[in-house]
Length: 237
Image 1 (cartoon, helix red, strand yellow):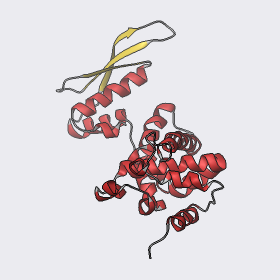
Image 2 (cartoon, one colour):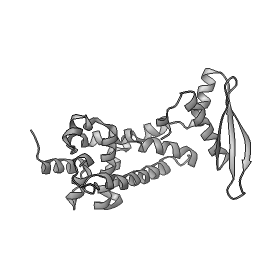
Image 3 (cartoon, one colour):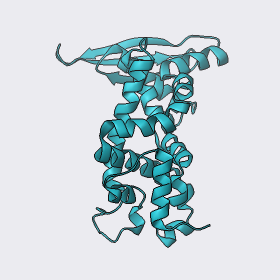
Image 4 (cartoon, helix red, strand yellow):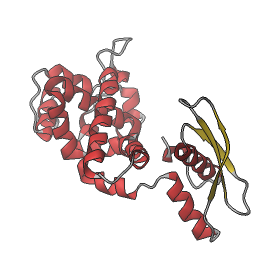
């Protein structure tokens, strides 16, 4: 049975177990820019998506901090990137049911917009932004708990940082351990720059710079993984 636009919004509120005080926020969160008649996209989801992206980052960072007290900052940062990327948000959007009711232009509809991870991810972030504006961080956090936390631990534990990934690959393929060497230390004491190269016997080294030895090592390992096509840019972004 086909639902009216108002019935779709009611259905979504039931899925969220939350009733909006300002229903126009929810309507905007599920309206793609392709359908908006406003040239500045004020009536579409884009402004809410901008805010929701930050809300998602905060909620994810807090959960990482609370759930993994043994993680250092360098362990949390790459996992944060994995947990807030568009495909993760798109899976949450599908679980919520946003793909069924998002409002698209006819052209975008014909182009398969309901299945595009970028569109679904943006809409999911916009929904978090709408919840935050309407009900504060508590409202956004309840939706996050329902539709993100189910896969949170699996994603966080599965994700490996670049140094770990490179070490496991080098040991499996070449039976060696990568070696890191500081090749340059420049900059003032309050703002140092470390340049590090990572070497695996038989392969060209990769070089990168960072504000600490650890940061430079992480970036050098990333460059090595990208060059050898073990990682793609999506594994970093």
